[in-house]
Image 1 (cartoon, one colour):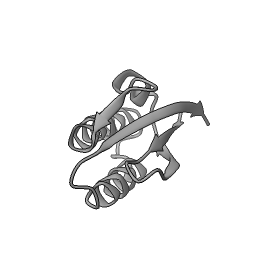
Image 2: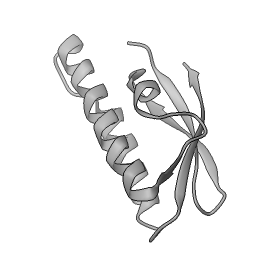
Image 3: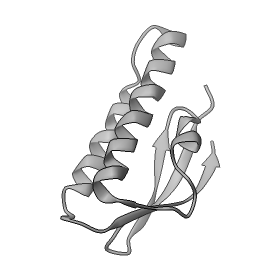
Length: 93
């Protein structure tokens, strides 16, 4: 399956590349668009669930890396009561 990383910029100014086992994130997020933290988390849940479902349909098991990505996003987002998250770009692996 094609993999992609997306460059996430958090409300505190920190950024980092986040893994996705599927290109679905390119359909879910718009580069440069600011998302309220809660919306970003909800969209991330949708994207990682879809990515894991795609892995399951192809390989017969869900994607543990998608689950780990979502857990990381949720943990990071828990530190913000408000603010916006921006996806700055994508890079295919």
